[in-house]
Amino acid sequence: MKTVSSMPESCTAMPRAKLIDTLSLGFRYQKNCCRPGLLLRRARSRPTSVRVLSSMDSARVRPKVLVADIGGTNARFSVWSACGSEEICNWSCQTSVHASFESCLEQLLSETQIDEFDAACFAVAGVVSNDSCTLTNIGWTVDAKTIKSSFNIRKVKVINDFEAVGYGIFELKPEDIMELHQGEPASTGPIAVLGPGTGLGEAILLWDPHSDQYAVHATEGSHADFAARGTLQHELALWLEEQLQECEVEHLCSGPGLVRIYDFLRRQKTSGLPILTPAEVSEKAAIGSCEVCAQAVNVFLEILGAEAANLSLKCLASGGVYIAGGIPPKMGDMLSNGHLLNSFLRPGCKMHGLRKSFPLRVVLNPEVGLLGSKSVALKMLSS
Image: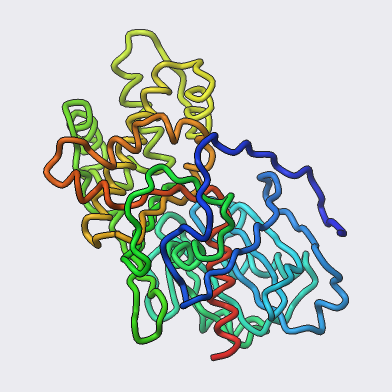
């Protein structure tokens, strides 16, 4: 394997929890067609990185698909052969270094030396209308017509990033999923997907008996009002409303939200505590070096568990609830410390029995959005 701008592979320890077998997932994407996916290689975070995984000379003359998962912080791209069995290269950059999506795409083409694609699917963090989206947390606009007119790509589709995650869960390997609660999975029951990162994404999957597969419906449920539980969360919500004039779920159930929870808690302490990033809060909580960070993570997990339950109740997610996003895979054993699951199940509440029937799983593969985009792009070739 040839590497351009090579760097060491990142090493992430798997949480010690029960891993679910693909055959027991309790869902089908297409009837009798739930196949394992491919785990993409991931480079360490830096402004840009390219990994070439097969012969570039042969890649230039073969049909190819380009897929991307574009969030508020990072844009990740991958080039695949038209059959979907071979990844040619992958490329990533920080969104902050580019003023526009077109600028980012131009750099990708320059560095990979591939300038022609048969199809492309771009998953973006925002509301998509008519194959166009202005991302929620950055100023980029990703528009299919503009891309087709500016670049040599035959077919272009723009989808919501959590629509891509919804398709991507069917491409995962058994080791990519951690089961927090087995529940009573229904083979074609509704599925809820959500995940915190720079923001919070949510989607619902409903079985379509006519096409014999799931249809993925992106939502903007993360911008609904935050429903506080208990005195601390109510005080947190009031404190945040004073600053932002509102308190959405995403304001607390996201990377910036974790920092807001930490900031709220540290202001209640007499001793001065430093300003921290989301990664620093998680790291200090994991190693037990900061009591306030540990409390912040626990409150964050309780809010995430409650929101997962709220989404599951709204669609009766008997097919399972999947927590994805950039943050959960980095929280390791803290995911199974009981705060997330207990908040999801809420023992003693009126609907505890129904909540208990819903499977709860955490997606450990951070490239699930890319896998979902690839699935959509490959279907575009035959349409």
